[in-house]
Image (cartoon, rainbow, N blue to C red; front, side, top):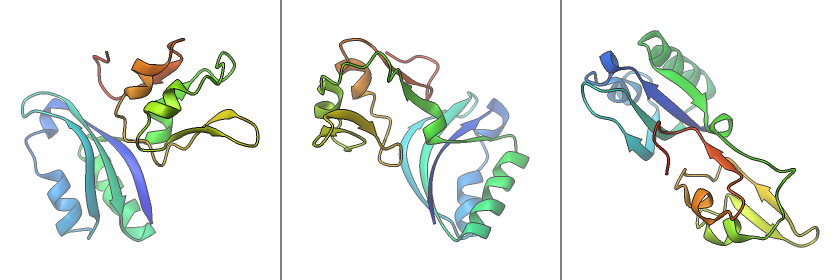
Amino acid sequence: MIKKVVLSFPVDATDRSLTYDLVKIYDIRINILKAEIEAGKSGKLLVELDADEAALADGLAYLESNGVTVSLLASKISYDKEKCINCGNCASACFAKALTIGEPDWELHFNPEKCIVCKLCLKSCPLKLFRIEFTDNIE
């Protein structure tokens, strides 16, 4: 089972090897897609976790017991679908193919499982309809 999550580390957890423990203790394969973290400061990781369902549940519970907030990536990304004009600018900028537009309805479709929080949709949307909660300082 693969899950894409955002891990939010509090200041007191950034200097501990918690992700190493996920690999060593829980046998979870980790693919780090984006990282904004420094020792002594809070930070976030966007990771893809791969393991069986029980190991994932145990590993995520371990992180939470150590003060790390775990959020599904889909809960961190949104756009105002009602105001979207389906121009396709964001879809053409999205190299991960999380945003697509095409036949038969020519409407924008978003697949959060493919998103890597590159933030190109923020820059390409002429109406500024996207919101991404990954950092405190998003351009």
